[in-house]
Image (cartoon, rainbow, N blue to C red; front, side, top):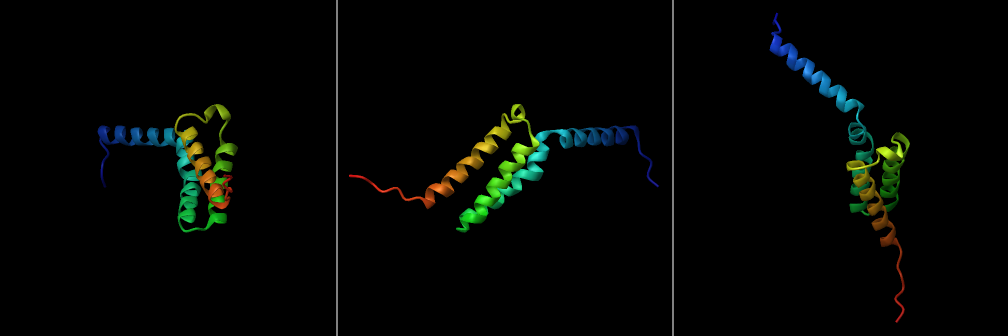
Length: 102
């Protein structure tokens, strides 16, 4: 049976503390909930599955808006939402042909 030294106990405590920090921070939640939907949307869009791409992008945005207060949507999370809206814009702009008036 292995005996834990003070150093090992300290390291384990530090790991547990960091894990608790990341579990309570919004970026951890973002990574584990909204980001996979964004990435699925990218994959669908690249494979010309427009409806599925829109659904995934909208799900990512819904998660962000449901789980975070407006004041929390800054920095990385604001950038993430901007990228998602940009992807949605790309999807919709590909579907609409604007006639050129000459």
